[in-house]
Image (cartoon, rainbow, N blue to C red; front, side, top):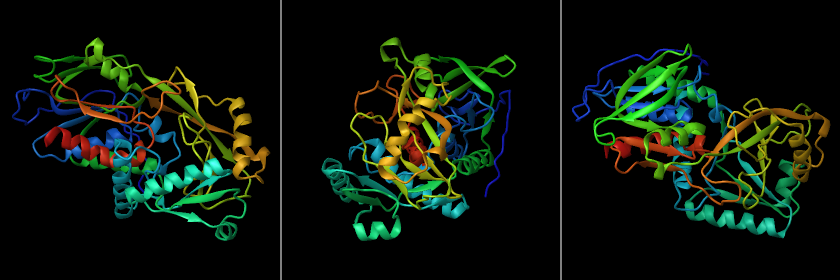
Length: 398
């Protein structure tokens, strides 16, 4: 298992770019804002290009302390999203890349499989629809008959039926991020932690001369660097970074969905597969589901609570009261006294509650050369991260 490291660096380090582009006087070829799992995957890809220099800017003292480490750590199959969406394409490709990387590099992971459980005819129709969509995407799913369900997981209730996702699993996200950071720095990449971006100045005509990035360190000292290309992978702060660079007509309003997770201290029941209820339309998430960590510990969540503050990470007792009936619907013999509040995570959204499906936004910004925006990178961002890294590299160099 890879060591988990913290590499706080409160000052920026400078290195001249060797690129021959018009912005060749810049300090760096690439500047990436945000060292979550997606930012790390992008940084690793860009640092691999010969003759370039890459810096990764992160306001916290370690990588992945926000959405990347406050989630279920699930490797998703890619079942829920429109067929031609980036979420579907990148999730499927990213899942394959994730399993391959983890196997080769010894990053802890496990193909647990997942059950989607239907309690009535309407939910079963939704399961069958997911099954047909999965077939069209070549994502392996299968229907589990009652005899098999009783043999494998007798404590799981599914009154109407079960759809199994055969390629769903879990990953140690912290070990993954430690590996990606190590690979990035081994390739000569520079990291600047405890570094908060305060403003960005496009140079030349809307960035034709690169971008000047101003940032404050933990002691309040402001410094600046220049970069030929700027990649906004700031997660919950991505809309803020977007609005620093683009004109008012292209500003984005951020929305945030808070998810509370719940621990389970009893030893029974203890399923060996992930268990998900059927997703409710407009819910904003996948329901309060059962997941496992790599030690087999059961946990539940997340639920969905729309909030205004991305730093609102304190669990609320009222969320536990609401979650218990949802959990007992598919795990009726659970011990409610053993369920407790655990932690919360925030998912960046591009629309308010009830606004429907929102795809990832991953694009070069028209009229601003070298600027790549990544907005609304929520679930399945962890699963998609390696594929997103490749996509950003291709956007810049193909």
